[in-house]
Length: 135
Length: 102
Image (cartoon, rainbow over all chains, first blue to last red; front, side):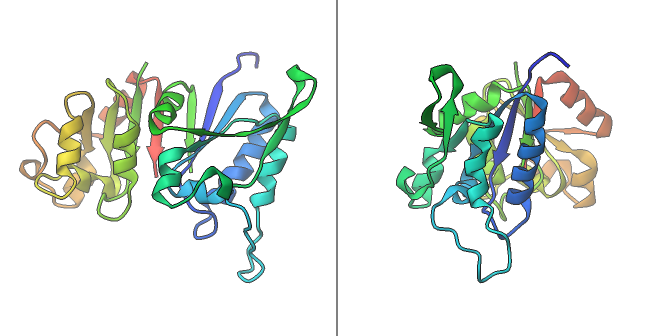
């Protein structure tokens, strides 16, 4: 397969109440093997997936939030987070964990993977994809 | 380039329809399926938001899902079209991508 397609994984659910968030991350990691142009979108309750300080010791479920920090190693470096969704939930960018990647086109400089975008920018990103997978 | 959006949750239970309406673009289509068909009802707390989009976005309900729930055509917002399963397939084929609002 030679044609590179744009894949967007849309995350709209909070992390531990349902299995959607973990399953999305699993699919992203599996899909990363296929050399496509991958982006992740976080909006609505999906923004809660990226918050700092998650501790699941008391609920018997794996804390998968550190796994987002591994995505850069799989060339998944575009994590778009919607500003309005943060605002609605009383969150700011500072409440989110730091996710970095090394830019191979810029002497491996460390750069942030999380990019805060407006609702209308998010709509533009969604409209620019070949494939949209929703979770 | 356009998108077919599907919404399968009641707008009175989740924000899926509202979020869909907030992110769709002129020329897109929204197909209400499963419990999403309740979003097509007239004179509800969300019907104004749906109606406002109808100039720029085509809105459909999946007939069998509306029928199953006893939603007669005259209870739906004017301008919403019913489609059957073949019509669903046609909508998918007609647009460049399909986005599910779960």
